[in-house]
Image (cartoon, rainbow, N blue to C red):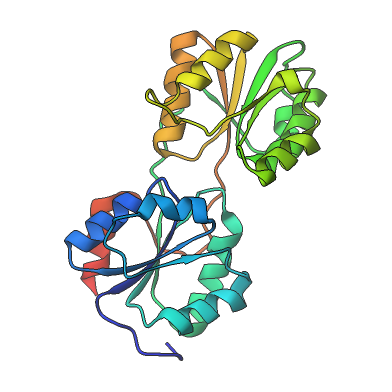
Length: 263
């Protein structure tokens, strides 16, 4: 690395609220010292009480921003990219920045779920080409993609319904999508005493026939496979982006820990 020398037991972990807290616990158990980078203050709350050296909050501003963080908070033996599978831009920027600095980088890539009866779609155009005339479709996706995918649902002849996070950004995305108020629920997904109970109720109340979610792996995708099976709904999955060419990836916690200790 052209900057500070690597520290043999320090890790910079980029993650959200899904995999991050579990990875912090396991890394700490194996005596790694962990600095966590998250995008929002809300995500940082998931790490309260966990053994982290530092939590950095805020979006990293491209390759230059990543290099600045590595200089300011390093040195690190490893950078672990456990960001959301659909956050493709940050993974590409991480690979470029770490390669430039000679910083070891490892991608924690969630294992893909079996498709079962679900249909895999490449993009919004593939969604628009689906035979969905007159069907009620729930967009179980992130707000950033809601406007584009809502338009694709309408092009397919379906009736779109969606959810928005109770935040300014979430509501702005829903407004840009043009969803009528009675086709929109403002909720925090998979929360409550019974995670997913709100989503299950919404599908019944709205008479949903088709659900669109992302092929993200992990508990959220597992939930939609189970719910659509239980309710007899059709499940469409947006195909997960591939990691950058040449990026070293592991698919489970055990393989991640073994790889970190190998060199």
